[in-house]
Image (cartoon, rainbow, N blue to C red):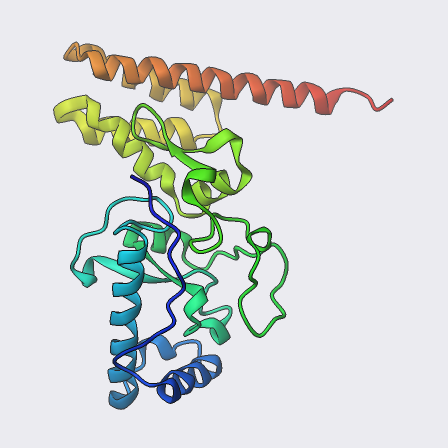
Length: 256
C-alpha cells in the first residue's frame, strides 16, 4: 500500500480561527517561532501540531508523505512536515496546505532543501504540481512517480524526474541500501556499508572494490538471496558506468 493524497486540513477543533491567524502572523515574523518557549503560544502550537498530525496521519493512510513507509501511531515517532521549508519561508509555517506528516528520516534528509521550481513570491504556497521539483504530498499521487521494486526499494516510476528528485532530496537511498542489506543475515551492517560505498562513490575503482567485498560477503555464507542482490547490483553498476562512458564520449564529440 502507498501513501494516499489527503484532503487539506480545514476544520480545527481545539483552537480558533483567530488563534490560527495569530500563529500565522507570529510565524511570518520569526522563523524560529515553531519551537517558541512562550507558554501561551506554545500551548496553542501544541494543539495545532496534534490536529495536523492526526489529520494527515489518517489522510495519508498512516504513511510518510515521501517514502511511503508506515508510521507508528505515537505522534512522537513522526514529524509534522513543512513541504516548503519554514526557515526559508516562515510565512507558510502555519499554512495548512504546506503541511503533511513525514518519517523523521525523510524530514531530516530533506531539511532546508529548496523544492520549488521558481522563487516563491506569492502570499500562499504555489498550488500547482508543476511548481514543485519533488512529489508533493497534496498535489501528486505517490504511485504516479514512485514505486517499489522486487527488493522493496523505492525507485522513480518510468524515470519520473519528480520521483528521482524526491529520492535524492529525502536521502531515500539510505533506506534502499538498508533494505538490500537485509538479505545478508548477520552481516547486514557490513553489507549496508559496502552498498552505500557502491552507490555513493564517484570513483570506478572504489565502486568495484566495494562490489568485490560485497560479493565475498554473500559467498561466505552461501546465501541465495544475498547472491541475487549482488547480481542485481552488478548489473546496475555496469549500466551506470556504461551510461557515464557514453555521456563522456558524447561531450567529447566535436560540434557540427
